[in-house]
Image (tube, rainbow, N blue to C red):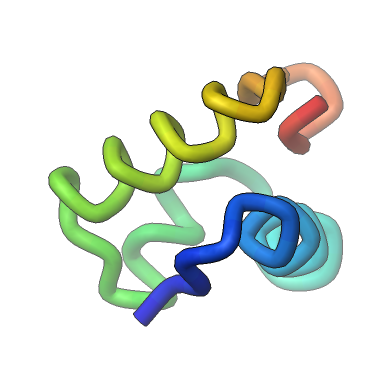
Length: 60
């Protein structure tokens, strides 16, 4: 289960991407995150002004 607080979610996902996964697809597979949960997380992060940058593999 992903954190619900957007700031904690940002930290958690970026740490996972940096330390363990080379892209969002691998993160979803590795953490067993479904497409609905991923979209909800992206929406929460978008709500605080962050979007995924594939080149740097992080939300910024």
